[in-house]
Image 1 (cartoon, rainbow, N blue to C red):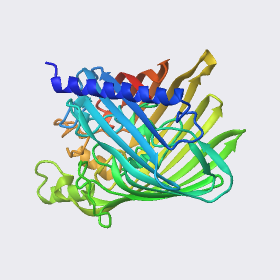
Image 2: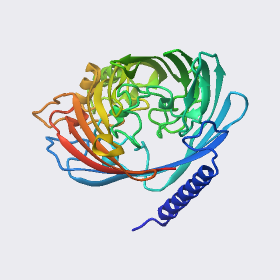
Image 3: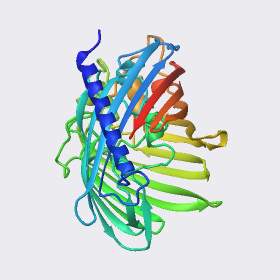
Image 4: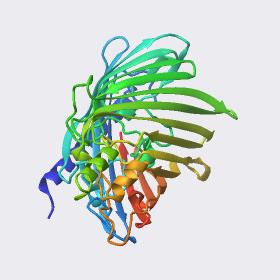
Amino acid sequence: MRNPLRQRCVRQVLAVGLCVGAMAAARADAGEATASAEYQDADVKFQSTYVWQRHAAFPAAYSGPNSLSAEREPRSYTLTATVFMGTRTWQGGELYFDPEMVSSQSLSNLHGLGAMTNGEDQKGGGPNPTPYLARLFVRHTWSLGGGSEQVEAAPNQLAGAVDKNRIVLTVGKLSLIDIFDNNAYAHDPRTQFLNWTIMTHGAFDFAADTRGYTSGAALEYYVDDWALRAGRFMQPRESNGLPLDPGVFEHYGDQAELERGHEIAGQPGKLRLLVFRNRARMGGFQDALDAWRAGGSVGVPSVADVRKDQDKTGFGINLEQALGADAGAFLRASRNDGGTETYAFTEVERSLSGGVSIKGATWGRADDVVGLGIVRNGLSAAHREYLANGGLGAFIGDGVPPAGSSYHYAAEQVVEGYYSANIAKGVWISFDYQHAGNPAYNADRGPVNFVGARLHLER
């Protein structure tokens, strides 16, 4: 049966989109704030993205509570809509406000993979359209000279000139990866690669609620070709939960990133080094195994039984490199200590990804993009042993292997390719394919093939 509430909310979202689009067009006709403007006092933008995916049936020796279904799943989807509003407040100050809506139906209830296939999907989502506040933050910039550079209009970015040397403070609610681990070719699942572990570091268990947002502060220092940024943000109150813990002196996510701009063969690029430390009430894999064995190995080990305040640390290396006017490549490598459960992102403890992105100017479609990426994810030894004995995580856990069999660990490997076609002004349709080997790090399951389509509107 059709859901009247959902239909009504979708109609309202579309109406807002048309209204915002009309406002943007009117400003453009009047010569006011547009994407090509040199300076903006205020701006309103809108996006809506619909992603559909399915996967075919695949071979599996056994399945468990958190397995990806081995049967064909004909349909999953996400629908998001966001209004981005920004204004200049005082000299050097800006204020941004982003209400958002989501409706979703996940493959296998978002279980069975470390490398989840849709970056728009949210933990705890559902088919009823849910409005919420995505971002509300202030940004202040102190100018330090060094010449100026033009900043183009974009969501949560007002057009204008800024000093090349500057200090930027951001405080409020936002996505942590709005600021950290950026990459020109693999960062935005609304327009680029969809896979979670291609859009950002797979092993970066960054602080976020179930929707991917958090609250905190970040300070950035730009000088010549260098940038240094650091920040502290709230963790959820409990593992993979929605409410955030305001006690940022007790539980927190800290990260620092050093960025260096460069040129290779006359083509620009950037190299980033990220380090992070999370402090939260987490369960450790070895603690869970020890407690399980001390209790006579009854049932299965559980990280939920051994949670305590402890740290998770890790690092990531991120490279983006232009290969010409219409092509670029990216490479990421990340690792965390692998001792504790996934707290806010996904079940990956070692990750290596890379790929290329090519614009369509070569074949006469300058606004089209084709991308090809590959990722290889792994787990720590303690996490492997935990799974081998039937332990479950937030996303993975194929249960106890059948009698006479055992768990066969293997690195999870995903290849993703997409083609994004610009079909009208501000409208793109994309086709996406992903091939996942050893889903949830289990050599006795898979491989599995995913196909998908994405419709993206922005005004």
